[in-house]
Length: 594
Image 1 (cartoon, rainbow, N blue to C red):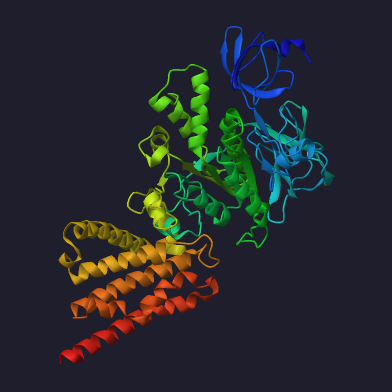
Image 2: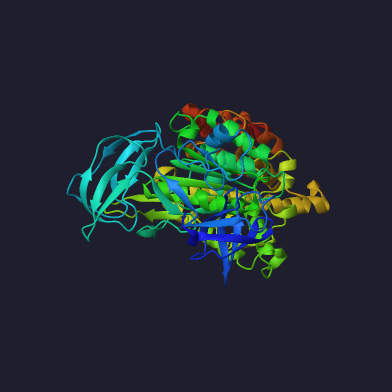
């Protein structure tokens, strides 16, 4: 090892240490600290002193121990073998770590992120002599039964293909040689590295136009997110943030799922790690892990690695986006990430901002979410990919005015506001329909009109109007009692209750109810609103509220969410039944009056 890249520790303050004499050091370079070679990252340079945040527990290290620089930024390894893996915050594969060190991560342990021994069958997609540029696909390997891994020309490289080989290779072996413009031969392997804090390049961003279908009715119909969109889920403890994140990871129609457990409790991450390998993907009938990458950084792991984990996850997600896949990243939770920033900032003795968070908190949050989007990929061919980012926020006591939530709301386009009051009523997902919003509605109206139903947007607006009216009527009831309401207003309360209980409320543990296709969602909502429309006509013709509530079709609407997707035709018959049964009641009322 070159002596020029060595320094010595002069100060230790938790995960933040200071070294002297580290020549040639640059911001964000990766270093090895102490006799145990703990991984760290340079975060401040001042004259001869270098401040480092260490990704591992620093107990026991002392001034005088050596520090070595790698002169490279913290980077992730990108290549075949990412899918199905479980990594820690700095991309150490936990299964390989367990094989080498047992059930606990040994400090300073170095394990390659990707398997160096496994051979992959490489199928070339270019020919010798062909001109290629950054992002072009040289070939592909079948990474899992559902994902074809495209081996791309790395950014900043272009030229003529000098040679390309078909066969079985490890990720470090050369599969192609490119002769660049200067005549230099550049060997290309399946393994690439990319610094986590630098967004991967693309040609241009495109406007979102297609929803990320999650199977959750309150999300897909009321507050949808697009492929390439950004959303946040703030809510107090016990309101169901993690369960919503799990549902999105299981059921969203993205090609690739990257789930980042950032500072969450160990038992929650254990649930994910135990449950995901057993789940079957509803779109492919293959195990869900065959399109999933998990990054686990629990609350008892070092705080600095928590800060790095979200960058590790989003860089992996961008890599698959560049292949043309639709990727969804779930970060649970960005509040724990912000707390890591606050702790490191405090140890650096930086000037604190609101509630002790660093002044650059908003910038860091914005730069993270800005890496989402639907893009035209860097390649000669017309290839598009998307990266959707959904972050959970855990405001203390459910206070949505705290800095992390407010800075997140400035940059996201979808807000799913969870409320513990709904969770205590056993209403899940506990998303409050009165405070939540989606700014993607205008982008999706054309898609809904062509792919779902022309009147879906109108039904959505009408349902939200009824729920708002219910809130206003409940205030009146609390003040002066139910007797002050007319039959028509009482009927509005009943229909709003049906929207809440028969449409918005959804069980994550019921085989039929856990996922609803967009068509099923539309049919259920349409049935409820047709019932409302026909019921109002019945009230005008003299029907009583009891008559309207007693028709058999109303009970069938309540059971509609348990109908299988293959039996949706039976749901369409409800529309005629509602009209017929209310008309029959109306005729009976008219005849009795005669």
